Amino acid sequence: MTQNLKKMTRHRGQYKSGHESPYELSRSRIENFVRCPACFYMQQVLKIDFPSIPGFNINEATDVLLKRDFDKYRGQSETHPFLINMGMEHLIPFEHENFELWTQSLHFGAQDRMNTVHRPTHLKIGGGLDDVWLNTKTNQLHIVDYKSTSQKSDGKEITLDDPWKAAYKRQMDLYVWVMRQKGFDVSDEGYFLYCDGDRFSDYDFLGNQNAIMKFKMSLIPYNVDTSWIEPTLFDIKKCLDGPRCPEHGPSCEHGMFLEQATAAI
Image 1 (tube, one colour):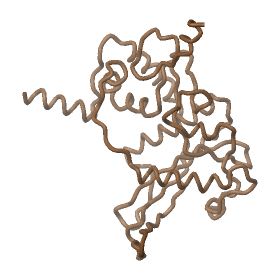
Image 2 (cartoon, one colour; image 1 turned 180 degrees about the vertical axis):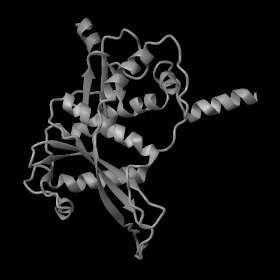
Image 3 (cartoon, one colour; image 1 turned 30 degrees about the horizontal axis):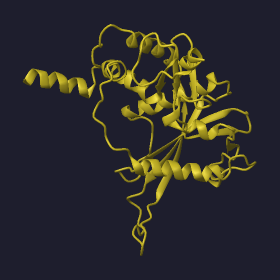
Image 4 (spheres, helix red, strand yellow; image 1 turned 90 degrees about the vertical axis):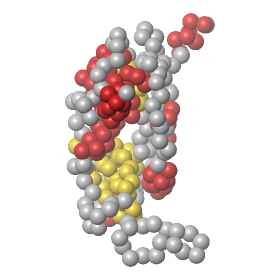
């Protein structure tokens, strides 16, 4: 009985070589490795806590509101008027008994959540989805990620071309890969649904009791590239089992800070 309980112990937080359970890594932790293997090693192996920043509550609020709107049509034969207006009435919010569990990013490693085990590296990979749409023409699924911003230039089109949005693309790549590993037929095309806080249009923001901000909406398709994922998982495993901390990435701000601080002392 004790042995069975031991086998059920989850392996998360600080990495322990030789642990029986697969080591749980969220999408954000994998992104940390891509950005800087040294910072990843310090967090996962040495358990060094890096400075944190407060969460973006406004962004979280738009995510909650978008999901609430699409949930009204989940499991129905019709779709949201926004998609109809976009000429995409063939896309409907996907219903699944575990859908709510898939959205729980903080508990991604638990049973029935959005995770998969990569057997060759013994890593459990996952995260929290924003949404999934079913294509009624192809019966494939499309992964959807909600994003919020407020453009500082009037009339500027939102694109995925900014260098820092490469992390958004990798997030989409990884979620498509995980869902495919779970046995779902997922399209190569995902969607970013952007809420752009409108600071330029002439409308009253502050009312008698409430303030209402308008958002311009953009739906941006993205063709995923999952070819980088498995090689990266092998690199991560090698890093975790390595005898020492690797070098900081060339664009790592923490590494540059430490180098400058060391030189100044």
